[in-house]
Image (cartoon, rainbow, N blue to C red):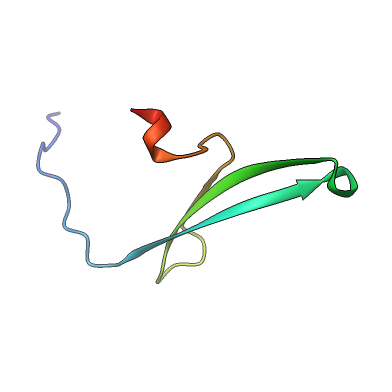
Length: 57
């Protein structure tokens, strides 16, 4: 079996949202990033580990 190196064509648009989530009655907060397929409510990814894309470089 051989993998096809050509990525599939994307026909749907992805959207992203960033959040600052506050917990413990405001004593703590963290940042989260959500990436979603605009056409499929079940296709999404949420991460609380990315503060800014620049910090990943």
